[in-house]
Structures are given as C-alpha cells and as structure tokens.
Length: 314
Ligand code: UDP
Ligand code: MG
Image (tube, rainbow, N blue to C red; front, side, top):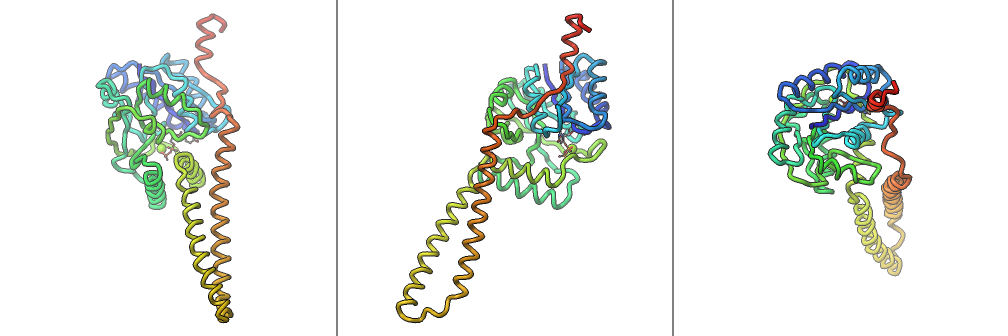
C-alpha cells in the first residue's frame, strides 16, 4: 500500500480537489493507497473538509495539530502515522503534479528506496526568491555536501527509509535534506512546478529566512569555523601591526597611526559581535534541541473515530 502524506495549512480551497485528483489517479492505475491529510493548525475550514472526506472515504485519514507547527512537523507526523509499504509526500496545492505518482510508484517497485521529484523549472517565483534559494542551496552544498539544487519535498520513500527518518531524534528537522542524508538507492524524476491551484503561498519572507538559517545551522558547522579562521587571520594581522607599532615607538616616529587604531578597534569590535552572534545562534539551537519538546502535538486523528466505531462505542 502507498501512503500519501499531504501537509495542509489553510488550504480550504484545495483540499477537496487535491483529494479527488489524487484519488482518481490512484484508482485509474490500480494502486492501493491511503491519503493522510495533516492539518497544520489551519484557521479556516480545512479541518471540517478533511473530517468530512474521511467520513466519506475509507482510505482518507486526517490528523489535526493543536496549532501551527510548520510543514516539517506535518510531514513527520504523516511519516510517523502512515501504514503503507511506501510513503509519498506531496503539497496540497497541486504544485507537485500528482500525475507523477504512478511513475514514482513503479520506480519504487523496481527497487529504488527513494524516488525524488526534482524541479526542472522553479515555476513562477520572484527574482528575490530565486536568488535567495540559489544562495541557500549553494551554501548548503558548499558546506555540507548535500546537493539540493531543484530539491523539493515531493518524494516517495520505502518503508525502510520512513523508519530510518522516524528514528532520527532531533527536534529541528529539514525533511528535504534528511531524506537524502539517510542514503539508500535514489532515483530522480523531473517535474515542472505547476501554478498553485488556489489560495496564496503560506510562506512569508521572514518565515523562509528563519527556515533557511535553521536548516543551514543544523546541517553544518562551517559558519563557526569561519569565525575561528577569521579570528586567526585577525590575530596574525594584529601581530604584524603590533611589531610595526613597536618598531615605530622605539625609533621615535610613533605619532601617526591613530587612524589605524580606530580602524582596528572597529574591525575587531564588529568581528567579535558577528562571532558572538553566530555562536549564540548555535547555542540557541542546542537549547531548542535539549528541551526535547515534541515536533508537533496532535489534537485529533480521524482514525480514533474509526476505531471507536469498530468497537461499537459510537
Ligand atoms: N504548509 C504547512 N504548514 C505551514 C506552511 C505550509 O503545512 O506552516 C503546507 C501547505 O499547506 C502546502 C505546503 O506546505 O501544502 C506548501 O506550502 P506552500 O504552497 O505555501 O509553499 P510553496 O509552494 O510556496 O513553497
Ligand atoms: Mg505551493
């Protein structure tokens, strides 16, 4: 059985269409599937729709978060609760073409453990967004060796991979990179990002920036190493300038160099501030991890109702 995990946050305009499109494709291709909608604390009617669908169709299940925990939490909730031999993660807005699912499923049948859908084109995105994404992926590749150009959250994974991901203990997760970090035989197929079916993108620039920072720091320590290296360079410069100053002092030409002092104070001062900032950022990540809070809190699972029904309580 294939589990299809769909994170949804304020997607009332998309849920029914997505469910029917995906359901239709699966039926056409004779693939046995369960569709899991994870409602990430939506404030609109998303949950009512999911709940209704789950009553109408046996293979649709809904999980509801107690508040908005973010897409990462939603994906991992789906992975934790899915029952399939393989699981696919797909967006709720039909930007990830579900027509690819049967092809991905067949690749899985051929023995691939991870089938990644990579973006051949990034669809309609603003210039700033594109540049930002490029910088981020460049930094990721340069510092942690994970090539994520074109990577998306649209993936199909074998049970083994799902279990491996479920066992990861960290709180701050980055599904897109973790699913390649765990390894396994991977196949890639390309897709063109479609336009959003309805509604607006749920990511603000601030949210994306925070997301990028948190992912970079959870995959690489390079920024901290940059701090050390720059510190060493500054130290060498300080020795050279120190010697020069002393020589000038002893030869009696020490009047000048006032500007050098100011420059140095400014430079070292700003460098120390940046360094402290970076270190502070890592410490805050450690702090978040060490609290061991769950990645999400479920407030409702439509399977509870189904189970009660089977027992005859309802
Ligand atoms: N999403 C979510 N929680 C959030 C933000 C987004 O579950 O806090 C879901 C959203 O419902 C959609 C998917 O993540 O199914 C991708 O979101 P969106 O389309 O807004 O992102 P974009 O396509 O612009 O990257
Ligand atoms: Mg989208």
